[in-house]
Length: 111
Length: 116
Image 1: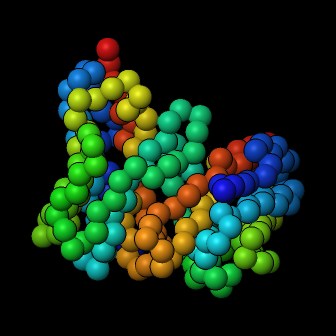
Image 2: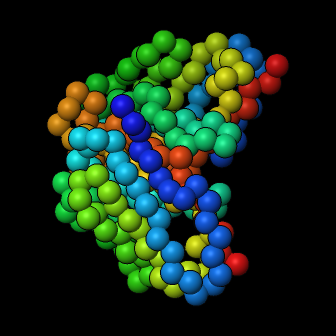
Image 3: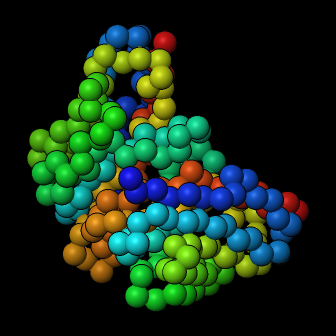
């Protein structure tokens, strides 16, 4: 069935450095790829997304890259800050609305 | 605007009990999702409604899990009978298909279920 794999279960970077989280998906019909953030003790909230008609999208310090041939997408966070520490989930949509999530990556920002 | 409201925040049940979790989506949203979150399995989709119609009935979760959407502003998830392996955080999310931010999910705070 549809599957989204998130490659890094944990990631630790020094404050100010960049962080990259990678995901792959199985279904070539996927058209929508959002990212969600879950801070400690809280629920998930949306951070950024990309659709299959583009291969790059940037919002402030966040950039999402999409490689449709490789069925891979990634979240890049530049100039990391302590408040970036959280669990990040990638997801993919096979039809309008239904989202399948990756396992999550716990990002820790070290001072 | 109110976000997604889930009640209760915490639930403790004895094995074999029936429990009902509740969710009120964002007003005007037409898609509603129930997910289960555990450390091992991550986020698993349990049920998915579009305009109150059941689109996804949970596959492996069908036998003891039943989600209903009684009206556009209220949904329940019943687990009957509960088992210790059901201990998890149950998340409800809603979205508006057709708007500028179509497919962006808004999550509730979740219900933490512990089955003894």
